[in-house]
Length: 254
Picture 1 (cartoon, rainbow, N blue to C red):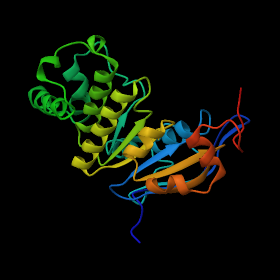
Picture 2: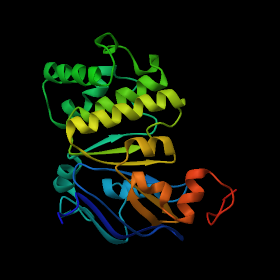
Picture 3: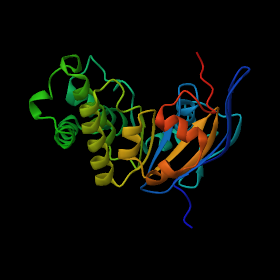
């Protein structure tokens, strides 16, 4: 079998006495889309930040394209980060910059691209996510929530990264706009051929964009498999979560 594009083995991460990740094992094949589901505090965001190098696990291995990520520093870490694109939960746009400059931020700051060239790419990427050139020079503050999500997606795909991370991409959107964003994610990822990891608690989004789904609970992956098999997982944690039931093995933290 080919080596996974991203592979986590026995990853542990604590904050003081709080043990958040307790041996995460999960892998993503090249060009595939993995969705990690789980409740608040289950370890989804911490797992993502460990892959990105923003947090440093105390134990375990994280490999990207066969290269160990844990322990990378300086230029080696910068080079690894340059392979990633990220769509943040709240879009995380710079309100002081126009829409097109937000999309082109990584091209100008990271790749040192000429402004005119970066603007042309930004306009192309905005068009790919369904936004017209008339919005290029407006402030993000003038956009709706759905539009801001689209700009965030355009920014992530502008440098054409090989790996894209999505943090709760449909949070704060109504179901129809959520489906629009899900479809844009699927189309954009296919166009790039990128490997993706998405963290979410939105099962409609997980089913739409995931080739594979993994569920994390109390810092461990309790189930992982093809997205179309999740309803037949026969896993009590998965069953309780995807059906939103109060009764089951998942402890409700009030």
